[in-house]
Image 1 (spheres, helix red, strand yellow):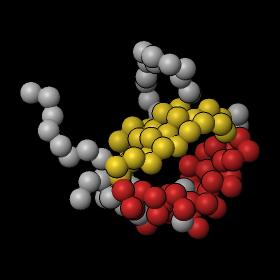
Image 2: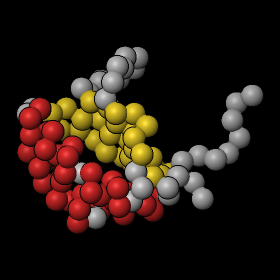
Image 3: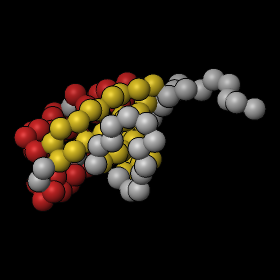
Image 4: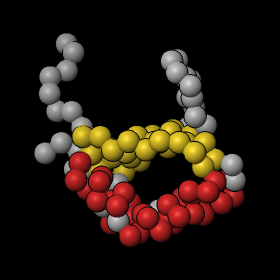
Amino acid sequence: MPKGYWIVRMDNTNPERYKEYATANGAAFRKYGARFVVRAGRFEAVEGKPRARNVVIEFPSYQAALDCFHSPEYQEALGIRKDISQGEIVVAEGYEGPQPS
């Protein structure tokens, strides 16, 4: 079964409040088996308009990734972030097919 991923690109206007969100989302991430693959860090936008924060979160399955987003635990954390950030979250299914050789 392919893994699921959140692909997150976000700008925030209140770094202190964003820290509260980052703490609050931990309950949902633990419950659904999330693992950070990319969490902020250095980046270079080689194409397109960048956002200040880039995150990729891996889940055991696509369904777990969706369930996490819609969970009461995450929705509570999202309430903290909604008014202080702008961006995109895409939930995507992992790829298990052939790779370039």
